[in-house]
Image 1: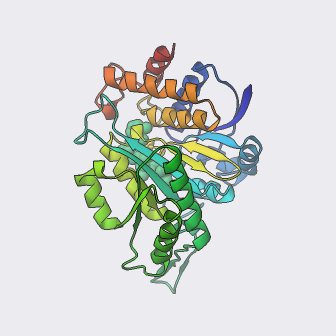
Image 2: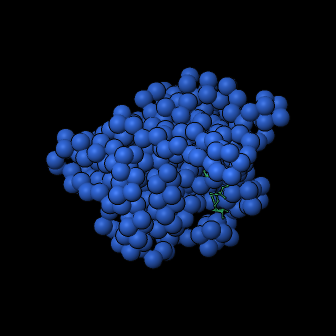
Length: 333
Ligand code: NAI
């Protein structure tokens, strides 16, 4: 059976890591018809937007996409392509595993976390305005429906994957209404899953606990902004952004992308670590039901990382993006 999948190469290091991931996925033998659609800085002049309609149309049609990072100009200009895409397609669950890899030496040996970040609201709702010339307001939206939906996704995942604990992360001591509602929703859903331990931790304390004892945590459930920040903390615990994969899941589609951005400083130099997008590709294969191929990709990545002969600069090696992908492909064969 052939699958139709949208491939968005993206900006900066995007095209290089997307090509690497595509070659690895093709090497599994799973039959994928890639529909390549360009988004980001490169199409702005021609289409007047970094996210032309054909991108959304392609994902709506194929229901599955693999996406490279897309640059968002800071402060001015267009809204983030990533945020717009997640909201437009209602990709409400951002799932980001962070697991210790054999061969990547960090201060931690036993990290195995999965982050569930609400992906559609919070301060990312994009409601901002100036109040006079010298003040600005951003509005934080938290709804019961979206909070319960991401909580249920996290608990269903935990149940399915045999995970033991869900920790809701919030700042309800200060934002009593908005974060209070998120926490109340998480608690309500937790009551339906008595077999899974539930706890809640305030976000600042959570950052300290993660740095001190990340092995004490299992699944983390967070509203959008804390999820964004804590994801990078967790990526740092296991080797950095170069190895942190992710998925944006909704009822009508799924977009798989690394946690990292377009890293413009190293773009076009064959220096970017492709593992994060390759592992996002493995998550995509699982989502398509190709579990055996997904497991083979993860195993091949782990072997390449443990052997240490083909690592990119961020992992202390000298290999290029394409050599690292070649090494993974060699293991698959
Ligand atoms: P970034 O993730 O691009 O880079 C942060 C640091 O990590 C840099 O030192 C970079 O060189 C390094 N890095 C990132 N990915 C790497 C990889 N695969 N291999 C080796 N080193 C890697 O974050 P930054 O600099 O904050 O954002 C750059 C641009 O990317 C911005 O325009 C931002 O809006 C966009 N962005 C896009 C995302 C997406 O498309 N999902 C996610 C995050 C940021």
